[in-house]
Length: 545
Image (cartoon, rainbow, N blue to C red; front, top):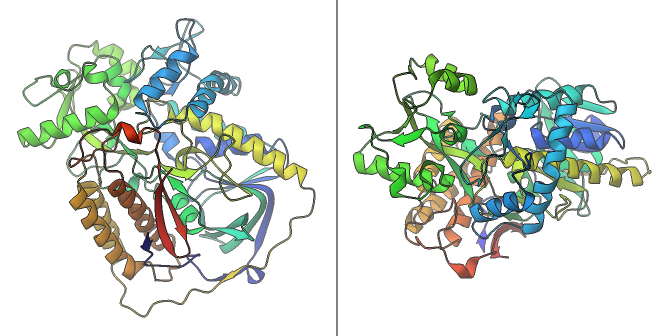
């Protein structure tokens, strides 16, 4: 148990009597696959309002390349998909949650097709790709390597045409509101309309991940862990926060942002090689390039260290280049933009932070520990991914549990026919008189230390050092009263960085994406055991569950 450097329940000062209010039966925070799917489902029951901090199509979903894993062929089976997911999850998956996602996945994909999604086909048969960890081809993809964009565009089109569903873009959710332990809305800030209160009978948190905590990441700028931080301030338990997945292959161009090179590229036969053209993955895992992501990421990191190299390479010289360009048009264009001739040059790659496995603890109906609040998508720990997410299971989870959360919230709200009554809630935050640090410098420094100390490979001493560094910055940043999104995001990032670090320090073993160099073995006694962090009486508590 550690004392929090900031005991504030809310980040801002407010009095609901003095702020404009919006009302809906269901309120959804986030416009990725989970939030959009939840909104569409909830609108079948009553009024829904969806808020998103950026534009509606600005999300990790829209950037997803590989596809959606689902049983879509006679040669595949639910049992096989379930077994593959459990194997990659390294003893931390919840079998019931995995089973539900696997069995309901095909229905959700058929639904997208009915709504107009154009998945890649040959003679009316959906084409299926192979990715790491899968025992058979089962990856449904669209436009070659733009599956996420097609899914997002389809859901956005349906959402915009759905009656009883309103969408507020550029609306930043600051904090969850609760009265007598029940969630009843959120405080928000809109760049045009200022501070507002959104009231609802049911709230769904679908705010996405936190990849921007790391210097090297595939995530867009919006992924700052806001939902994780909001939930923590509200006293909700967060589970498996140490489980951050790093993608092995992002395009490495010095000075440029990291761009994803889909796992499907290796699934189509690309080799991982060093600068001399030597393949090395077979030295690390019998599945070679198709080993689980954590194995491939660590292998690349180890080869980089051995050879004092900044990156490794993907070699596609043995593949049919015309077919490659057709299968991966976006990746081909990306390489061309950086003057990489894929017909004769290797693609420089290195790992980067990609997906947040840990998050708000939910049950199999997407309910959280707080009445009135549900959660889905990358903001939660649903039990589907365990200690390592199987490739292309993320869009699948968002579709399935987004629909579940929307249905549960819609039904709950419809049963409560009483008028929504604003509650008397207020918060007074006294601004600190201490000198303000350069917040942008704090954010950049935080991202660097998280990449260095809480990244692909971890060590107890460095984790301890990181908690001290984050606490130091926290004492100067967390007590400030900001009135802008950048400041609130930075406070959220500091909070989530601390949760990840203390969880990683507490798990004294290596499991899945969590690799402790000072505890390199997996402890069988920890199978099924989760790290849970929570804010209780101004203390940060952590326990095993």
